[in-house]
Amino acid sequence: MLIGLATLAALFLALMQTRIARSEAKQATGMATETAKRESQRDRREGERERQVRIDGLRKRAARQALSIWTSTSWTTDTVGNPVFAAAVRNDSEDVIREVVIRWRYQENGWREWTAEMVRSKGGGPLEYTSVESFPIVRGDELPLEIEFTDIYADRWLLRPDRSIELLQERTFRLPEDEA
Image 1 (cartoon, one colour):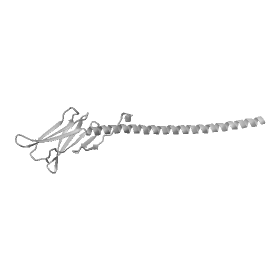
Image 2 (image 1 turned 135 degrees about the vertical axis):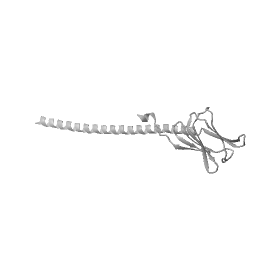
Image 3 (image 1 turned 180 degrees about the vertical axis):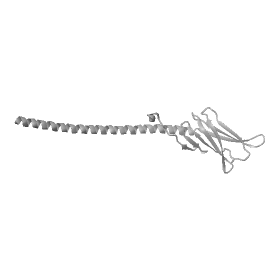
Image 4 (image 1 turned 90 degrees about the vertical axis):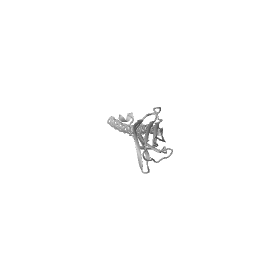
């Protein structure tokens, strides 16, 4: 009978130890899952930060390209004495700009514009425009030109006469790892 009680006590003790071991294993699994989840969230946040740094770098390069565009204007007269307006757009950046629209004030209430498919990059020479004007343009030593263009990064910019730039339409950045 004592042996039976001892066996029963040993069985009870083994069951209790098994329960405790299961409980501890469950706790350890829960903690491991939580740790893995936190690490995954941290990796995701770190990846997003790295991605944002890369996008910001592209934006800075795009703005730098926008500020590498220069204009000049001049006035002369043709052989008959009509005013001749000449404008040039120079791109000192490393990349071509496309879909170029150049605007200038025409008379008091209007604007004229000239479009070009592209302006070549540094060393490609300026894009030039000449027009004999039968009506006077608002004149000055330098005629302020606005330039709207698409840069190499597919952003659409407006460059104002005061050299301020406005991003009109931003391209959605897709990095190679975004495709996966």
